Image 1 (cartoon, rainbow, N blue to C red):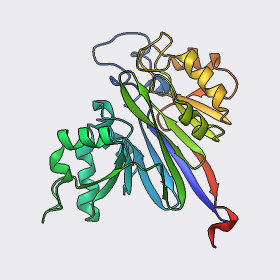
Image 2: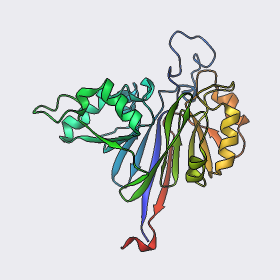
Image 3: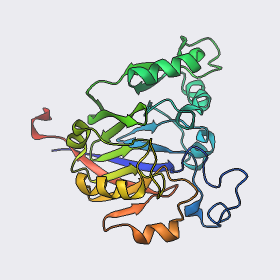
Length: 267
């Protein structure tokens, strides 16, 4: 058997406005705790020797510098809201330096929205690599990255769909208002679960704290971290309230695991 290392680093665990929120003077927005300072929601996956993003929000340049990210081998997109895609131009630096297109994955609605908003990023590479050059891939039922299986499950996000991802033993589920039965079956039993939890009060397009707790307990991950939190969520107040095995994420949090290839892999 062969074990392939897989890690996930939270580049941002904030909602669409980020925390602090511009113009706000609430307690959380004035907090000096780094765990109450949340960039827009995104993650970095290291799968063997490859590095993949989940989403490319408007804070991508800052996040990439903080993570000392020197290459991007692909991007998994959850949905086309601006706080998850508007850093797409910052992918240019990696295309220019490595002289190669970056494959991006998403469902048909997400790819169509990306092409509509950033059509220039889907043109063939030019002489000077002066723009992002992306290679679109319609998300299949499952594919592999460095032989680690990746699966996507479309779930309701208000009136649209957001893709929940399972990468080996790690799941990233942001911007959902419910999980489908198919998603629950496919995501059950992961080692690490990163799960949408906007705030205490209900939302038509996100899970509330209580809904996230209930969902996490059904999925049964060894450890769940809550993401996409707004400025009403004070880390020091809410983290102690979480049930056992559930905690609030924070920017820079990293988890490591391994995916074991089956015996019949042909090695």
